[in-house]
Length: 434
Image: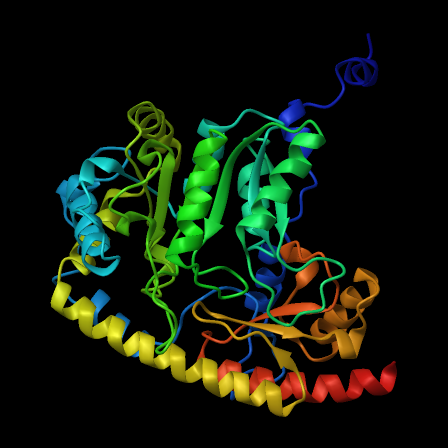
């Protein structure tokens, strides 16, 4: 048989699983790459791309870099080049446990043995989806939501995200909120369409809306999920990035009693609050022993390099330094949020009243319309191609209503200032074009 005939019989040279992702294009990574390849610099590259789409915290580099690069923290020796536990060295898990206990105000001290550490919260979501649900089953999630979560669930575990729309197609409120009725309706809709619901995920504070959920709502959700035998995944990666004057943040680990503590799994990482995303440290806190055993096995596929774990542990061990840093970081993001919010409102834009996180949730419906995502995409491409400005359209964050965008205000402050000026000019020119 000729070679070409053999290929036609066999089909492709990759698995069915790989066929699903062969042409998968991750929107957020694609445009981050475009910006990185031609990055804005006020002096060296004033026409480069300004990235206000990626969720980064660059507000405290002047504090982080000296601390991180001190000889006490950043060092390497032969002992650090050996094999160690796949789910995080004890030194790192102890440091993270102390940080979580201290700053998340947990009801009881976090036990390092309840932590599984892997290369970022993305990896946490991937292995949790693998362990909590089978291919084709669903996890409920309030939307709009950080777009990568769909990929993290679907790309390898083949688990689907089922929306709990906070912003619906018809909703015209500027700041609609999550409530237990919306959770119940989404669950009933999924069941009515013969979906198998295995879990619910909450980002608290939420991304992109910046909401902080009340303790009453959280307990209602925990109770509802327990009644329907659902796991709850709490992503608290922005927990320490709350604006001054905002409602109190309640970690899921703060509750003295829970309907089912074995079905509550809390995620934390150091990428956002501490602005060191490149170290790739994420942690899953769970008390469920069977799940813990499975996660430890899978963690070998997401193993953090030993030198990186050592650096992160040393970075996190000085609580006094962390307290000072977090106070400064909180004040800076609060000030920058207010400054950016005021600028956008002076442009005539409606902006959601966020309580924490890194984002402005902007209403561009008066500019690009609200009748179709095609109009939203046209405005997005205009910003990229004409203004060299990247912000994230709501469609990519599973927003049901066209016309909303997410802007990261915690990027390099100079980039944010220049980006807002570009946005103002682009709105004027786009309005003329339309």
